[in-house]
Length: 234
Ligand code: ADP
Ligand code: UDP
Image (cartoon, rainbow, N blue to C red; front, side, top):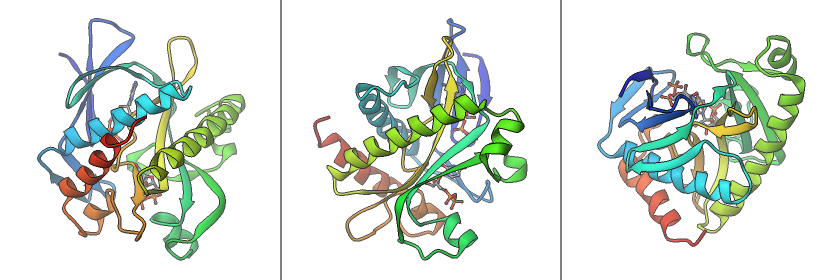
């Protein structure tokens, strides 16, 4: 297969169909804009399986996602999207960069979800941008941005409902959206403990913070999330 793009945690391969991609989930894990890196056996399988369960659940609940077919434990066939060059973040509870940037105490629950946008550019450290930057710099149109907010808040509610079933709090997450061949906004990339913060009822961190902060073994923490998701009926 022809490699089209290799990122920090996934590889995109071309397929026979120009509107489709094969995405491979790598075992590499990175944090702090690649300053911290490791290779963890079975990480790719865990993030792929978790993301596939979540994407299937979202699709069932009327969210347009890129997922076409699970090929094997580490590969998925997806619709090739024209990605918006933004990272879309929702915060329900304070953690990570917002605690440092705004001095908010970790674990503070917000009255309503906070919607953030970052310009997807590793050279500049994915800087936070506002609606005007997004529209004036041509990353999305104003109409697309409004739709992106609506879709993202809907995804947040669905994720909160899903994770409530397994007693896990959705603290924050990042998603990436793009346009499909019919110009519909579609959820791409992945949703997994690599891209979300998940806390159990005792605020134990069940996500990439276990790697960022050297708290726990990634494989066992990600396996907790996968086993719990596999144990519920969706
Ligand atoms: P990064 O680029 O941040 O290092 P990854 O290693 O996850 O991230 O690489 C996956 C890349 O594939 C990302 O740049 C993402 O925007 C892109 N991508 C994800 N899903 C799709 C899709 N369905 N169509 C086109 N590109 C996609
Ligand atoms: N996130 C991500 N990719 C990024 C930046 C953030 O998946 O390039 C996720 C991160 O895992 C967390 C949420 O987005 O769930 C908010 O991240 P934050 O801004 O707090 O950044 P961090 O503390 O991870 O640097």
